[in-house]
Structure formats: C-alpha cells, structure tokens
Picture (cartoon, rainbow, N blue to C red):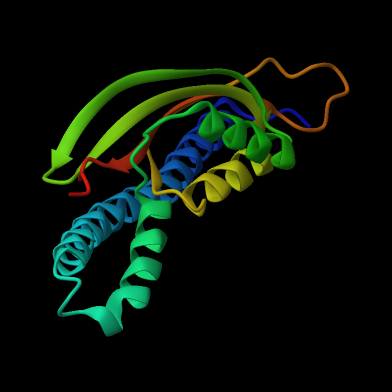
Length: 185
C-alpha cells in the first residue's frame, strides 16, 4: 500500500517533532543538573574555606581536628588541586570502556577561574557509541567521584550499515572538570 504525499509529510513532521521533544527532554535535565552543580561548588568552596580557617586555630580546636581532616579530605576528592591529570583521563577511558564507548580523543580546551577558590578546566571528548552506551557514559561521568559536568553535546548519526539493527553515533562533548585553587597555609 503506497502512502499518500500528505501522509508522508505528516509522518515526517511527527518524526521531527518527536526528535525535537526527545532532545529537549534529554538536555533540559542536564542543564538543570549543571546549574545545581555550580551551586553545589559555591557551597563546597565555602566549606573548604571554613575548614582551612578552623585548621589554622588548632590549639582551640584540638577536639575537632580529626573531624576537620576527614571532611577536608572528602572535599579534596571532589575538588582536588590538580585539574586534569593523566590519572583523570585514564579513569575517563576506563568509564568509557565499562560502558562500551570508544573514545577517539580527549583534548583540553581552556581553564577558567569560576569564583574565588575554584576553577573549571574544559575537556573536549570525542567518541562513538550506541545511544544506550551514550546515556550510560554521561551518567557515569556526572556521578564520578570528581566534580564533573557536561556543558555541550554534539551528536551525529553515522551511516547505518546494511543489516545493522542499532544506530551508531559520533559524539563530541565538552565536560568541565572542577578543581580547587585554594592553598594551604
């Protein structure tokens, strides 16, 4: 049964609307998470400052020293001093391997002071994957022990091979990796 031209246009319009809605529904939660993480960073930096000030007054705070050291170590895991190290890139590649994503390039972009006490280093990550692998990889990055968020994503479908049942995508995304600029006195 042959589809009419009007039916084809309607199906095409529905596909475009569905794709747009899918992208909107997929990206809005990521943007909201990005805003939430920036608020969390400001809060964590304030906690770092408080911890450093209390540590300077050790004679008065002997009973709180162990608690402060533990909290400071916890915060330094989230916002360590070294921004993008080989260890971080190696761990990103391990996350990619766990999810089946094939990374072709990780390239540092720029480093920006984002506020007093912290900065963001941008990494451009390029990879290929299936859709479910992409979702799993992004979730793994955003829930990693370091404070990382994704600010830009570009997704391009690759040509579907004959007999292939799943669409492969080429993805380029920018991830911010946050680190502390505070010095210990």
